[in-house]
Every structure is written in C-alpha cells, then in structure tokens.
Length: 148
Image 1 (spheres, rainbow, N blue to C red):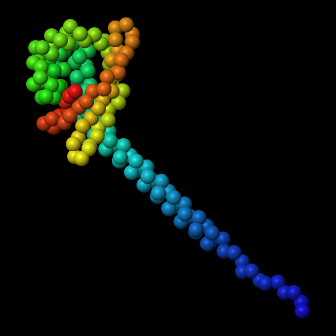
Image 2 (cartoon, one colour; image 1 turned 90 degrees about the horizontal axis):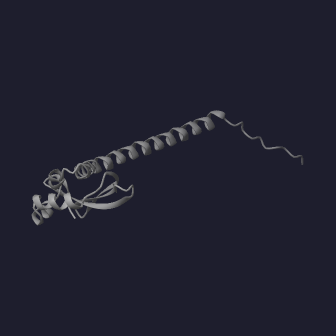
Image 3 (cartoon, rainbow, N blue to C red; image 1 turned 180 degrees about the horizontal axis):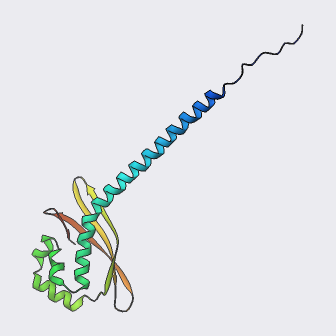
C-alpha cells in the first residue's frame, strides 16, 4: 500500500482579510463608544461642579478683597440666622488676613437624594505660608451656599 497525501484545500485569503476587517471595525466602534461615553460623563461631572465652584470662587474672592458683605451673602440661611451681617463683617475685619486663594478641588455628592458639596480652598497668608480649609456647601433655593 502506497502512502497518498491528503489534499488540503487551498486557503482563501479573502476570508482572513474579511475577519480582520470586521474585528478591526468592531474594536474601533468600541473605542469610539468609550471615548464618547467618557466625554459625556466628564462634561456632566463638570456641569455639576461648575455652579458650586463659582459660589466658592465668589465667596473666597470677596473674602480676599475684604468685601465681607458679599461674602456674607454667600452663606447659607442657617449661618446667616446665627450671626448678623454686621457681626460677620466686624469679626472678619479683625481676624481674616489671607492675601489670596486657590480652589484646590470641588466635590459634588448626592446621597439619598440630598445634594451637597465640599470644596478645598488653599488660603495664602501674608507671610507666604498657606493653609487649606474644607468648605461645605448646600443647595439652597437653587443656589450653592457656604454652610459649616
């Protein structure tokens, strides 16, 4: 009995190319979807932080400019009910010495439907040192207010 080799059908290069093209298209669509989804999430997070950041910026800017009535207006009603504007202005005029500020970060949270935020503010002191303060914000009448 003589050995007869089994004939292997010739490979079709078009099949491999088609498979590679389909895999490439699927991977491209997945990457594109990830980029678009990430961009949407980033914009949503920035939009959520924006108004809280603006409120902190107004408060801190007013404090550094020694415009204490404007800063007082950025406080929540709980703090304003506890201290009059005149007392706040007098107290801050005597004690507040910061010459500048930097908003290090703002974090907006939603816990069981209750929206809140915290902002880290680095205050620059006259001697060149700095100190960081965490400001708590609450949503009050549609606006972000500094509150304890």
